[in-house]
Image (cartoon, rainbow, N blue to C red; front, side, top):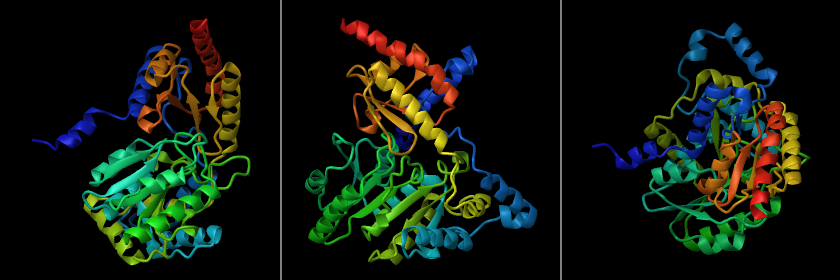
Length: 397
């Protein structure tokens, strides 16, 4: 007998991945230029020059054993120190090398954190719209997952959070800039959330940890600032990935940062190391640990994403769609033109538009459009979006 819960996850795949694979099949059938695939958050903008330059420098100057051998389980000490120093310079924090744990991307960061913190029967809270794997990660760690509904502006309803926290609440997950909405949580929102967590932690006599999922931290537009949450709440764990900022999603490299001011920081870091060990997430890819240490603060050309955002959001709004204009990330959250987002996405498929229904993100009636594609694809897709909107207008007549 197999583990039936795991078998169930394997049989019911992520709607994003299913759509992506459907797109690959359609591209093989009718040609890639005729399929408008907006399913996956797979950056189309090349990695910045520093990535390839760092790889070449490392290959030329370091031995094969150094580059391809094991590092310490939690990551190379010099890499962890470089990341800590960078965060301290950028955010006025006090991280050290032993605050940082190198991971196989943000998914591993989140999974390790949850396994480190959660005991069976604990509860984890997130806010719709949320990345669907949060539920999988939380329940896989033995927690009950509670999703709170979205607000009109896709910020966080702090009074509702206060009502929803119970003695069993162990952690709260936030994601800013948000996948799928692109919304950046304001400083006012962050302060309100942190005030609630401080009050409820004191009431229940145990910390309620704040896990901040930040793979899109640098991907913001128009001068918008992303508050660094560790400065507002001591019991914060930062989960970061270089996948989006450096356009290296296939390299699977990221880190966890444990806020040094956390009362039990040493125990939490030990639990992070133990969870990484138990899950088999030790020694993140050694070459790319060293690469990212040489590329801290760099990003791919995000002006392309801003142009894509403005082009797509402007056109869809003109055609009659209701869009949440994103301040960051590279997703456009759009209200479906009928209450059933799945049915809307099936109708869109007939025009070779591959859009992700947002039911699994906790927001019925919306779709996610990933605009980290070529600008040409967006330009070529606009007639299909317009024709789809016109079909719905005809239905209303």
